[in-house]
Amino acid sequence: MKHLSIKALIGILAVLFLNSYSNESKAQKVEHVFEKGQLAPSKFFTGNVYVTGLIENDDVFTTAGGEVFFKAGARSNWHSHPAGQILIVTAGIGYHQIKGQPIEVIHKGDVVKCPPDVDHWHGASKDASMSHIYIVPNTEKGIVEWKDAVTDEEYLKLN
Ligand code: MN
Image 1 (tube, rainbow, N blue to C red):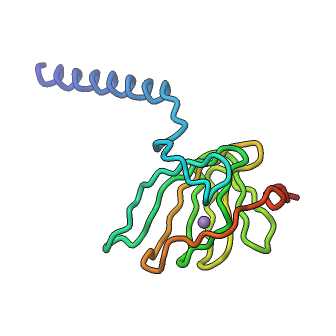
Image 2 (image 1 turned 180 degrees about the horizontal axis):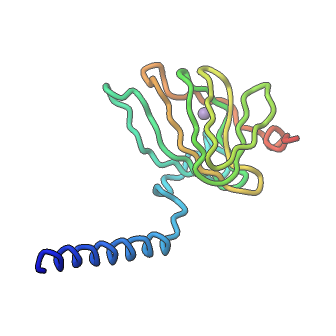
């Protein structure tokens, strides 16, 4: 009898724990996983852009990464990455453009590969903000080479 009641008690406690855990999860509204970050320099970005560093490159992991939050209308300058870059869109709607190609609309969940040494820019869409994680591999080759700002004319050239 004693053996059974302990089992029953554990069962009841487990159910109570799981119920309270799932209720708590439902109650939490999670919009941003990471901190908003630091305001990015206007030298390299147009509009309000915030950068949170997440992965610092070192001798073992020659990879840098972080999250960038672009308010609507905000974007990077034209730039290239000597070893390329991977973007993972974590929120909102944005634009990405490789030089000579049309602007590509990107959404939460999209993954974009920017090839090495190719001029491109990325940012929010005209009306909605966008956050993406960036991953820069092989940082021994360099991280980023900044170029001119993306003009309003270039930015609004979405067909
Ligand atoms: Mn880039």
